Length: 120
Length: 107
Figure (cartoon, rainbow over the protein chains, first blue to last red):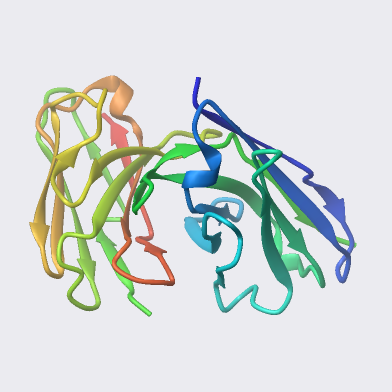
C-alpha cells in the first residue's frame, strides 16, 4: 500500500524547535519530489516547502524561509522538516504530500498529518 | 505569487442538486489547476488534476473545467457523502497556492 506517515509533532514554546518526519512506503520514494503543507486550526491549506529527489534543491514559503529546513534520507524513505524559531502562528496540522507523477502535479498521496502547537 | 480565489465560501444544497464551485487565479496558469476534497479531521483527497482530469477512483459526478484564470468544479448530482470542504490549488509555479476553500453542506 502506498502511504505516508508523519510523526514528530507536539507542544513547543515560542522560539523552540521541532523536527517532523514523514516515512514513505509502497512506492519508489527516491523518484519523487516531496512537499510539506500545513493547515492552521479552522483555516485553509498552505504550502510550506518542497525538496527534489536527492535533496539538493529545496524551496520554502516566505513565511518559513530562514526558520524551516526540509531534507530527506532516501535510504530510510523519509523526508524531514526541521522547524526552528517557532512562532504561535506556526500552530497547524502539518502534512507531507507526494505529487501524482515523478514530474510533479497534484498531490495524490497525503499523510495523516501531525499536529504542531506553539504556545507558552 | 499567484493568488487563488474561490467562490462561494460556503453553500447549502439538497441531495441530487447540481453544484458549481468557481476558482479564479490572479494570473494565467494554463491548466495547472487541481481540486481537492477535505472532510473534518482528514487529509485532503485529490478529485481533479490538470483542470479537467478525473483522479482514479473518484466518482464521475465530479468534473472540472477551465483554463487560463477561470476554473469550475461541478458535482452533477450532490450526494450525502459529498459534504466537505473543497479547495482548488495551482501548481503552475512556486509558491504553490490554494484557494480559501468552499464548504459544501447538505440541506
